[in-house]
Image 1 (spheres, one colour):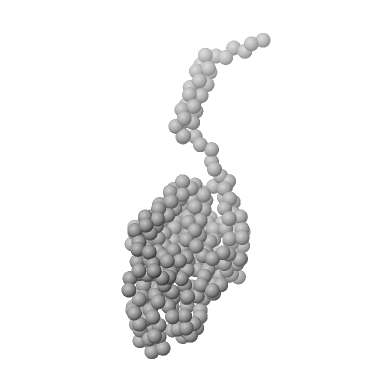
Image 2: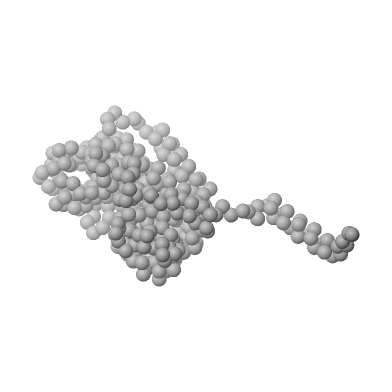
Length: 326
């Protein structure tokens, strides 16, 4: 027995089918790529949708979010005005997003913002055993992605590399459904460095370099696991404490004097200015025979250039030029 379908129903079905077919052809109907999983230090974090209320900590991590134009997915940022400022090229991009805390946020700050995502790192907004960690935020519904360079504080990790920063951008792209944009951004950074390096005069010698962050009694510097080492090597130099298995650490001045750095990188942030740090080294008698001091070979990097983030590209270029100047 056949069923007779009214003409009006047939027309409605055909019309709906045409609309669906047209939408599929135009890409208006697409299968979601979620759920998506990314590796965050020693964890796998799965997202069923893009976070809608993200918070980033520190100036360099915030600039990564802005580089991918993720402002619409953010409810604020933390940890900038207490120490640093955004780079001028990113300041306008922050728009009306509020700074929720001038330094590290508490759980209460993140809860008050109704955050569902926290982009931070170990010693970049989180401390081992502290109140704000992936474990303490998970019960609150706040997922965490950890800065790759910082993973050394909780697990074994290879030497720092500019690839760490690229990986973070790509993972953020996956998390927020901006993978294509992230891949294009990273490809652009890589090509920019290739073009820059192709025009450089080859170095005749590898300059030895000391990173001076802060401290007068003992200098705070960066070892082989910190981003400055990656920047120095990408520019053609060698960190004098490349044998120290730390990211950021304190050492004795004796080691600096004995290793005779030819170039000193000054990390500029906080209450003590870069010029004050340079003057301290110039005016301290025990430093007068350090080649970098004797020859006045200081290079200033802003904090945001010396830590993982988009400004690393400009930092490499500036260091490469400085290593070739006498």
